[in-house]
Length: 336
Image (cartoon, rainbow, N blue to C red):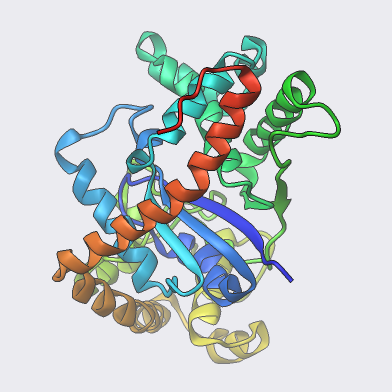
């Protein structure tokens, strides 16, 4: 039986944090043998907001190496860079021409980011969901793992695909496969170290809000020492203690202990005794990833070969889809 194909992408803006790993990547590493996986470093998306050109290439390497260091297996998965496959940009333009403008103007993420950027907001930010649709549709993805903030974008992708199929394919000859959201096994929801009511995010302006996968032991110790806590005596899980819930939950996940076991161990502790325990648990969990990452980054030839092979595999799929789209639109195509 043919495996279902899945596509997922990460922007090369800052490195991944422990919330990304525990909330998604770790689960996906376990599930990857069940799927045909395409993991994309979406560097075209990265420039829809102001970025640093001096670090973009290195950040792209970092994300690719972290995928591998976290356990993404090339026997089951393809890792590639979005800008290396020109079909992404070409299909995005073609989809632009069949997508109503008001579909993009209603996107919540655009509205929120446009307010922050004011007059400097780019057309690229408005068009971001079209490029995301191109990413997904190029690979005939059966399923797409999406978080809460991307659900609306996947719905737009489905709407665009169905509109295109209706206009240029018909019921008997659809051009695009309609992707479904992938309801993954529930991963850990790791909250900000600065505010236990907000999800940990690499876009948070404060680096103290998150533990990055490449943080040094000293940095981890400093961040946990400074993280927000409460003044209530005794540590336990309670609805009115978001920071306590977050830190105890993180400790439980990293040490593979149940809530009951964590409560039994920590209920009589103060923060001064608990924080070093949590620090050690984080360091122990990240050390193997960091060791593997450093090995990969010292062998750029290997990493380049992974991305070159990934580009070739991605192009072999994407170009077939692109040709199908251009045929449907009536373009003149001359075969060599």
